[in-house]
Length: 216
Image 1 (cartoon, rainbow, N blue to C red):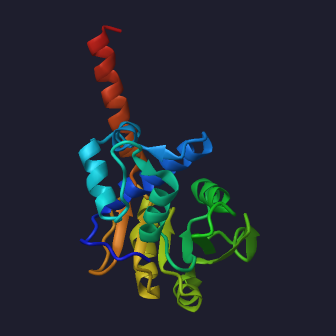
Image 2 (cartoon, helix red, strand yellow):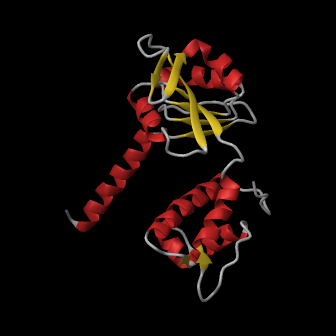
Image 3 (tube, one colour):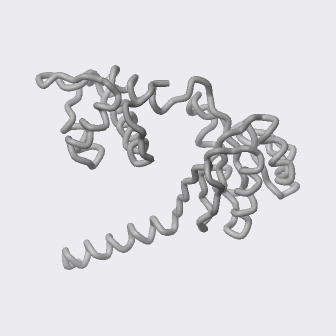
């Protein structure tokens, strides 16, 4: 993995991930070069921000031709991707959990959902979308045995903190929380709280505001 010149923020990591997806689209459309202002328009940021992010990758561009897409993608991958696939555990195999399992099944070699956990006896000891589902009371032991470093929380709000505590006891260092509640984690554990309802409320609010501006 490439060592960056400076520490990288979570926002910068998010932008690099977005750049890579956009670059892949350009590559699939037959492009081999891209300018910073083109990438900025697609990413919704400024060309200066794109150039600052790329400077950290030590990938050089040309004023006449821009950046080679393949080299830029390789530079981003050297930062974002691990040397070996990272194991992921999923807590909650309801509608959302199943959708997550289906989405990641065979999608990328970088992340492997190694184990799922649920309290529903009709779901445990089964293989769902290629992933074995264990009883939730085995979460800590399975996480330790499988050396799972990343956890996804897709349980109801009332159960989220307990599941997060169990993941942390097992040794997980990164958590993606889909439960509609902010969770507490120990120092040294990174958590992303993804509040779908709050995001929808923001979108709906600005949609109403834009509608009022247009007089609709």
